Structure formats: C-alpha cells, structure tokens
Image 1 (cartoon, rainbow, N blue to C red):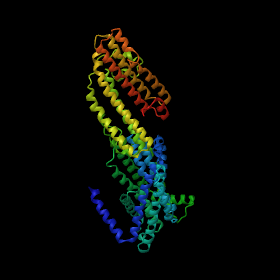
Image 2 (cartoon, rainbow, N blue to C red; image 1 turned 60 degrees about the vertical axis):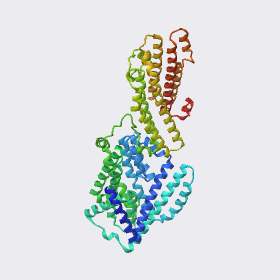
Image 3 (cartoon, one colour; image 1 turned 30 degrees about the horizontal axis):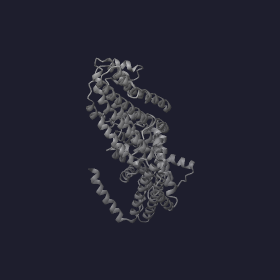
Image 4 (cartoon, one colour; image 1 turned 90 degrees about the horizontal axis):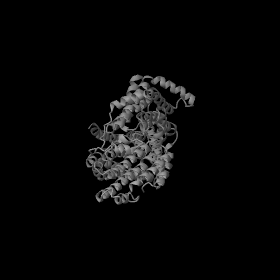
Length: 585
C-alpha cells in the first residue's frame, strides 16, 4: 500500500526536476541510461555464459572462503549482484548449494560490486567515455541480431556497456553544467552530524534508484566534478551500501524462505559493515591515503580514493562477519522455517527456480526422484511387501515367500493423493522452464518428462497386478502361488537393484548393473521362454490361471522395464552411455 502511494509522488517529483532544470534532466537521464545498461549486461551474461556461471557457483561454494571468492569474481565479471542473488536463491531452492555457501557468495558479491566504482573512477571521469559507447552500441546491436545465443549474449553485454558508459557521460556532463549555476559543495557538513546526514542521503538515493552501482556512479561523478566534498562522498558511499539492503529486504517480501534468509544475511552484513565504517571513518580515510600513496593514486584523485575506500570497508566487513557464518546460518534457519510441502506436491519447484535453466533442470530431476520414491512405496505395497523388508537383502525370493500377508492399500486413492498432483506439477514446471533453455537442456527436460510418465504408468499397471497377487498367494494351488511369488520377486529385485544403482557414482558400473537387470527380467516373458506352455501341458494350472498369469507377467515385465528406463534417465549422467543402453528417443 505504501509502495503504491509513494510511486505517483515519485513520478511527480521526477517530472518536476525534468521540467525545472536542464542540468537535473541530464543527470537523471544519465542514471536511467546507466540502469538500462546494467539490465542489458545482466541479460547478456545469462545468454553469453551458457550456464557456465551457474556451474561455477555450484562447484565453488563448498566452503565459505571459496564461496566468498566465487561471489567476488562472479560479480566483478558480470557487474550484477542482483543476477547473482537470483541464481543463488534458485540454487538454494533446488538444494544445489548450502545456505552457508549462499551467504558466502553474497558476502563476496559485496566486494565484487565495488569494481563498478573502480571502472567509473578509472575511466568514466578521466576520459571522454561516451566516445567509446557508440562503437559498443553499434557492434552490440549487430551481434544481437545473430541467431547464435552466444553472440546474442555478447551483443547484450556490449549494448549494456555502451549504455553504462553513455550514462556516466551524461551524469558527468550534467554535474559539470550544474557547477556553473549551483555549487552543491557549499552544503558540505563537517563532523559526525554531516556523516549521518550524508549516510541517510546515500541510503535514500539507493532505495529510490534501486541500484547501489548507479548510486556509486552518481557519487563519483559528482565528486570528480567538485559538486560534493570528499568526506561527504565517503559518507554517501556508506549510505549506498546500507540502502541496498532496504532494496533487498523489499524484494524478498514475496520470496520463499531462502530469499528471505539471504536478504536478512545481506542486511546484517551491510549494517555491521556500515557501523564499522561510521565508527572508524576518519581512520579508514587515513588508511586510504596511505594505500593510495603505495598504489600510485594521486593525492587529488578523490574519485579513485573513494573507490578504494568502498573496497576497503567491504573487505573489512567480510573479515568481521564471515567467521560467524555458522551461527548466522543457525539463526536464519530458525528465523524463517521452510514450509513443509505435502508429499503429493512439488518440494523443489517454485517460480525462482524456473528463472535459471541449470537450477530448473536440477530441481526437476530431484522432483522426478521424489515422484519415484512415492511410487516405489505403492509398488512395494501392491505386491504385499514393505520396502525395508527386501531392500539390500541377498535372498529376496525368501523374503517374498515369508511375506504373504495382504497389505491393504487402495492404489487408485494413492494415485490421486500422492502421484497425480505431483506428476502435474512436474509437467507444468518442465513446460514453463523450457522457455529459457537451449536445445540440449530441453532434450534433458524431455527425458525427465518421459521418466515421470513411465513412473505413473508403472503405478497404473501394478493396480491390475495387485488383485491377482492377493488372490493367488492365498490359494491352495502351490504352482500358481510360486509363479506369482516369482513375479513379486522380480519387481522387488528391480526396485532393490535400482536402489543400489542410485548410490553409485561410476557410470560404467551402473551400466553393468542395468544390463544384468535387463537380462533378469526377461524371465518374465513366459510366452517367449515357453514357461506357460510347460505349465499347461503338465496340467499344473487351469485355463483361467493361465490367462491371468500371462497378463500379469506382462504387467510385471512392463513395470520392471519402465523402472529401468527411469533409472537410466536419473542416475546415468554420461550421454554416450545412455545412448548405448538405449535411452528412449
């Protein structure tokens, strides 16, 4: 409600500034162009990296120091902490990284965002940066029309950089023109009162602009043109850091528990960092002077000194807060509890996950495994077994023969309550997630949808089988009872072998296990192997038993075959081995 009422007032204020001052209009246009550039760069890196950023994040966040380093490098390269935050939240939702690793990435990204200040202070205020914007925009637009996504991504990055440079040029031009009519430096304030006032201004500016990078670019250009004093610029930089946490908190209100946890971690980090910077402001300014001398930064180059200050106090913040990451994780998990989703609905899929192809794929795979686990419960009960009784056992046939008590389960009801909705969620999310995927990723999604369908079909098939199993294992004919026990054994053995396969990490070993399993279930084809002819000739079973056994053997074979195909999709990663086995196409 507050946001809706504030927005019209904000638009009116902008309109007033645009029509009342040409210089203000130039500065505001510069900010707008700068922000457009950041959006283009973010979109460009999504396409250009081809999922590489996601893969790096997944593999480089095992420890907090690694996560911090990864967060720094990733943000420094892509120049977008918001993109990184989206990826991290989606990875958390898909359980690809731990909460401590995600927090480490956020800490590192705070240092990474300071590279924007270095770019602006090094190039933006010292050369005619707008001249370099035009070639970037031209080549960027050309690349964007290429059909190759890598070139399209590179085009977006170049267009983004062009707009960023152009925006900086406009901001600099506006402040230089404003200097002739209005000197903002005359409002400079000394002492800690001035520090607090300018921190507030910096925070408010970041909340309004919704980008700490744009705020820093604005501060540096104002400082370089003499519109603000150096000490006040330091306070504005601290305020920009604090203001970005407000943006994160607002953005997390509609997010899941993981988004809220990261937003609060970000808030705590920036508040601690800001507090340290405020208390030791003048000591840090002296440290900047010393380091500037060592780095060859001129005494009067306040823009680069500001960039150095921005980096130093963020590094100090990381050093101060990161040792307490473990305790922070415990606090955040207690603060925001995960809503326990019903077993019949998706556990890993949400709107955040869909945004990132790599995390969407990982989440879909986990969800299909979730569906498989739900299905194995009903498959075991349908053949009058409990999973814990036969999984990992050497003599499964013995377990089967000793377990002839009927397990009362309504498969139709089970399907409706624990399978159908979950299957629907998987198909729904799989379809939506494909919008941002390349051809290879879409192929993987296709196989995951096929695997889900196979699981559902196996559950439907076992319903047909259940009735006769319950009837014949209680009957007096030992021959037909033994034959149905063999059907139960083959299904149980298939579930057991797949359970063993899913815990192995060697694709060749998995391949061997699957080929052996394929050979074993061929025994279920009682017409092909002549078993049914033998039973009929020996008058071991009557014609009704024979037709039931033929049909039920076919059901058992189809169930086992479907489950093996699911195992190939879920637990063999090597594409060539999948083709060798005969993955569905």
